[in-house]
Image (cartoon, rainbow, N blue to C red; front, side, top):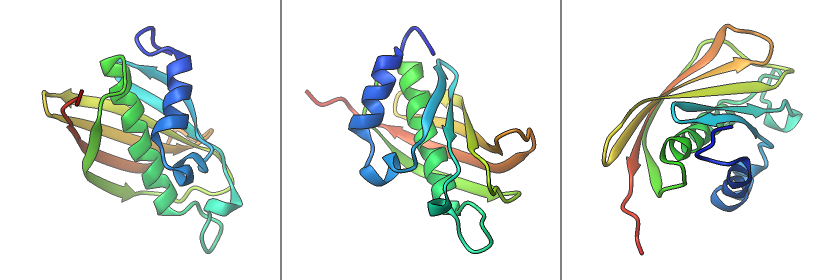
Length: 142
C-alpha cells in the first residue's frame, strides 16, 4: 500500500464511492501506489455466463474500478472523476479462478488521465483482457 493513500482510506473509498452492485463483485485492493493499482476479484458462479466463463460486464467493471484506485493513489486522495472512454479487448476466457486487475497510469493531466489495465486469471501470467481507459478529472466543488 502507498504511504500517500493509507489502507484505511482505501477501505473507506470502497464502501463510500461505489454502487452496491460494484461492491457485490467482492473485490479487494491488493496494492495502490502513485503509478497504479492491483485489484483482485474472487471467482463466483454469479459472475459467469454460459459455459462457466466470467462475463465481460464483470471484467469491465473491475477494470474501470481499478483506475479509480490508481488515480486516487496518484493523487493521495479521492478526487471526483468519471470514465470518458473504455476500450476492452477480450483475449482469453477466465473461468473457475479469481481475476487480477493491474492498472497502470500512463499520463495524468489537469483535466484528463489515461490508463492501461490488464486482467489475468490468478496464477496465469498470460493477459486475458486488455483495457485502455480515459478519465475526466472533475473540478472539486466546495
